[in-house]
Length: 259
Ligand code: DGL
Image 1 (cartoon, rainbow, N blue to C red):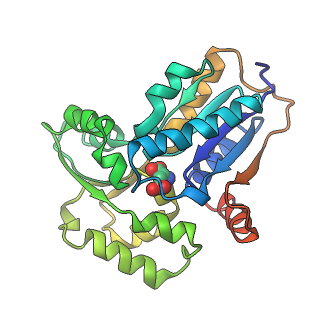
Image 2: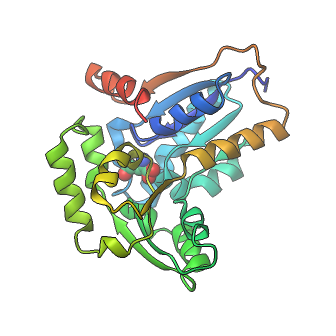
């Protein structure tokens, strides 16, 4: 595969656009083919088998388009399918997981109190259990499933301040937020809520997402394979979606400008 080939990036819907945005910022010469599966969103309340089947169909489509790598810009699809995808395809498959390590490392050895906000499926899967096992002895970790934060983005209501704050209060008011050190945004849709989380949380609480780390990893992998796009290449993001409606296309374009 030539270094000028595109990178396939997908998500259950519009959340992964926050990752495509970060690729465009950090790797401006790369061409990104983004596929949002909004017709089938949310993934987070489906079974792992359903999410695996949907993920395979998307990656198969990317491979036919000649991508040099795939980024699963979705923690949920990563939980359900990354191992099987890597076993099946030869191109690099970059996955995502909640950035719990980043949150715990911030304490430099001191016990951290961390909320991990993600989808129900991500928090139920083995991959997250393994991640918890690495940190739960030394840190206090609260997994919090927040499925409504996905549907609010997908339905274009992200700017409805009252609705969003009501929803966040519903999920987080049972915590003593003043004692929380960090909230991990373990779903790519949630990255669009950063400002709202800032409003909800005391200044002392960090808000952490995995987008920068994922894109750094993508860079390292492509560099090691000699597959980074040349510096004179013109990069960009092409948006596609399984929901063909103009509403979703407009929403996707708007979100690409946001984070
Ligand atoms: N954006 C996805 C994630 O990072 C999943 C959202 C969903 O479809 O439930 O987990």
